[in-house]
Each structure stands twice: as structure tokens, then as C-alpha cells.
Length: 197
Image: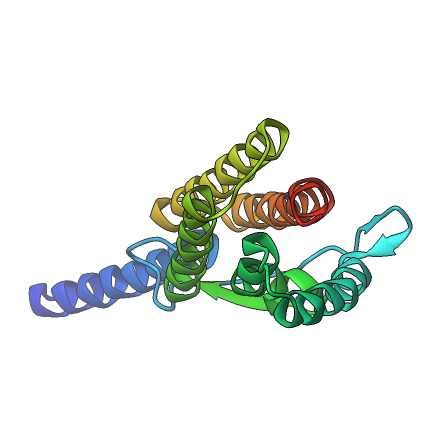
């Protein structure tokens, strides 16, 4: 084999190796810098809480909340908790949280999620100055604020992680889904229930 032909074979071999390595990295580390698509398909679980799905719990709360909001709008004394909850609820109604179908996650989706959580936290911060809360209610408000901050940190951790494998991402997004549900549960059954009466 002559030298030119050897170089050509080595060049083709090196090119194939590079393509295989990039394909493996793209598949195994879907959100890495070297990944081609930088997206990941998350397969949510269908867990229940108190024998209800998250979607059922959300529907039950929304039905009761809409009645509270109607009463509040008709009242001369508006309750800031009831009024502001309408701006907080959408972060708990994200499709990837409610459904059981697979969802594609990418950095843009995580950025959007982070932005929405930050806005919800800012809405809660506004309640500190707008609402006249008892000591117990303030404690629950601070707990809710801390819960939202923890959500932000979890989203940032996933978004900024360059070398999480597919199984790592599945586990972390499952944990994040559980965290969203826990924050919803605390907000609705603890802070909202105590502070809107």
C-alpha cells in the first residue's frame, strides 16, 4: 500500500471514529456541549398522592380557587393571597407535570421554566408587603418562598450540568417533578388555606 493510500484510509478511519464518538456523546450525554440536539425525552411517572393523581389534585384545587376568586372580586376587601394565586398557579400547570406522556426537555424549556418560577417567587415576595399576615401565616409564606428558591436551584443545576447521562437526567427530572408537586401541595394546603380566610 502506498503512502497516499495509507493516509487516506487513516483519514477516513479517524473521521468515522470522530463521528461515532460524537454520536455516542450526543446519545449518552444529551445536554452536553458536544451533543447535536441538546435535548432529552423525559418519561414522567404516574404517581398518586392520597389516591389522587396530580392532575386530579390540581383540578380539585382550581375548582375551589375559582369560587374563592369570584368571592374576592365581589368583595370590597380584596385578599392579596387569593388575588395573586392566579399568577402563581400556571407554574404548577405545566404539561410535563400533569400528563404522563413523554416530554422533550431542552435548555430553552429549562430556561422558560426557571423564568416562570422566578416570576412566581417575585409574586410571593410582593405578598410580603401587600398582605397583612399573622405570625403563623408569615412563617408559611417564608416556607413557600424557600420552596420556590429550591425549585430555582434544582432547575439551574439541571440546566447548567453539561455531563449528565440519560439516566441521571431521568432521575433528576423525576425529582424535580416531585419537588414541583410538593411545592404545590405546601402552597395550596398550607399557605393558601391558612392565609385566605
